[in-house]
Image (tube, rainbow over all chains, first blue to last red; front, side, top):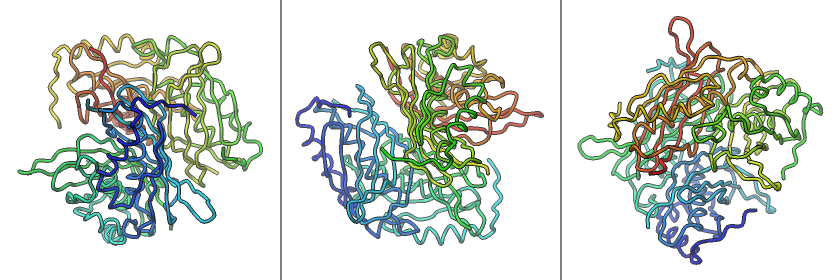
Length: 146
Length: 146
Length: 146
Length: 146
């Protein structure tokens, strides 16, 4: 859609290094699937120890995946010395987070000097390549540092 | 502030039973601190395995605590046969989630027949009884069932 | 993208009749540009009497356009006897609402039995057919009645 | 609750001058009722030309009142040379905006160097001093300039 040009050609390394420092990502079993200018995907598997009362993945885990994807989507477009913080996000829960695997896909909607707005979706992956949208996020990120 | 009257005098038992069925609550080390008509508090300790890249508690964990508190605040006011689902929430992250313990406090803003709107805050608890506001949520809950 | 099938073949008439009953739409100079299953567009012209302190269109007017478009996008998919109310919305303001004309485009993200989630964008229309994104909304609508 | 100290003792004059430059405020019949450190109230009367399809005040007008109140609540705490922009807001609509007069009350939740988070409520004023909550907002404001 939009064609973002990264200011820092080494953006992917910065994203991967920051992701690796997030102990929550490892504990929650999340992994970076894709890092492109203005776009990041994070995958995770269903894990019974993170379920809510009906046996679906807890909304907090869904949030962790898509908020993280949104933040790194923003980070792909900053200069080398900057970091990104979540100012706020809104998440709509559309269907129960039922499935064996999930993917959170985030994209930059608008990259400003200090504020970047991102949108993200979480899909449950089912048999035969079917994807079911389970949640959608609209998030505000802020560049800090450097 | 508002004086909510529960429809079901046994509301606390329903909340505690539902909470106990959430495996994520146990895994994340969360516990129900307070259940009152229209109000719920959830406590959690800092745990290094759920941190983000700067060593603070991950926003997804903060979300899990306060979204759960909001949902159960709504549940205290439903009739006995109903359950509550999160339709959506917005979370503003106000300060780094730094601290040894945290508490998420949620209250019902307006209880409708099907839709209940809740507000929640997450505080870091520090030495000497000091509380620091780290995040604030506005959430929409929906009654289902029965 | 998604292919919505209206339950009521006469959905467009319902949307247009409801829109015509909104006195605010006339006062604000808004008009229905497009009504399709799950999609609605509303146009408006810049009007100096609805500006904020920097001479741009007020965020409340931008909201009126895109919230209304979201609501009617949801209404295209309900049965004949139902109406739609806004439960809540989040709007990110991305650029100053500067321009001579604007268009708000809304689409249904997920249509449930009672809750429908919509996304909407507001564009400023400039010379040469250029469109500039000025705001983006994520909204929750509820079916009522009948 | 919180005790905000304005950096600029002349904060009220700045708020009133900015408000006076908003042509939308005059057109919509809004007026500044109260300006205090971290708090602003805006009043408005019901006006038939700004109604939605059921004869209630349009959500866009409700938004205009409370978003403006939130922005000026943030502005009371900035230094003299700064202005405030709305980054985003979320509004929950709790009851029909029915009444002869309304008041939007906003307060700063947290004032940061660049980002200020505000909460606001809109009440319908009815006979005998009764106030009915019709909407609640959580908003993110950004300091700019100077």
